[in-house]
Length: 368
Image (cartoon, rainbow, N blue to C red; front, side):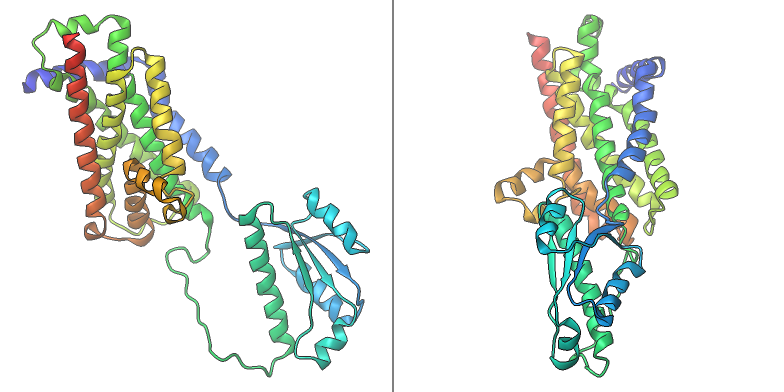
């Protein structure tokens, strides 16, 4: 059995080595996608365009406006005369927000407990609108404390941000991108393994040999496990050195658990291949089964707890959901095996079930 299995694996390895298209998909495509998506997917706002209406025209109002333009975060793009022009600026996207300083601002600042100002936010993009509002609140609160230095806060807050002190969204996105790319590439590689034999007419040579379906499936998966691990290692190293993603955990632990994730992803590709009649159908099935689910339903971008209950149940069928917790936990937080063993166990069970189903499907095709 071992010799037959190794013979199938050797045949598949030779096919990979001689297929230039497969080599490009394996080694170049993940790196290209990592560079493109790593820079493109970001939640950071580097410049908030803001319009300012100063109806008070006092030294205090000018100080408040100067504090807006002091840093690099805010850029004053317009000084409209009236509130009516603000709506046009927000509708056309020329401004994210508008600050209106009413008449009497300076007098109220010195005679009343608080001086009102109005903030208008473009809420079409709720995420961006919330971030802009929070930044403006921080700035206005800071200005309020400067104007009333004798006021004491009822408590003192000392904030410490762990694991991502600079709060760069890239630190959160790139490890998730690694999981998405590995899953997609693994499924693509093996999705055409059986379909290619069937389409090129070489399946008959395998059928007439004394090879069990289990040996055919496992023999075809083995070379891709090694290739996918090499691919995953290069992607992780690339993310650390190019994007500066911290790696606080055990590299060998991540490598070992990546084997389990690669196993589950390859098994998914083999299952698709066992049912697809052509390579094109297999590739389309692999893309549909991996790309969108791993991006939308794995917690890569959107929190799973915020999804409807039905979608939360569906996310249990997405392998990237579990590997995301593994790679983010090990790379960013330095967690150990006790934190991620349940995710690894699920991936192993998931891969084994898919592999057994693939063997069963392959046997059915032989009987037909």
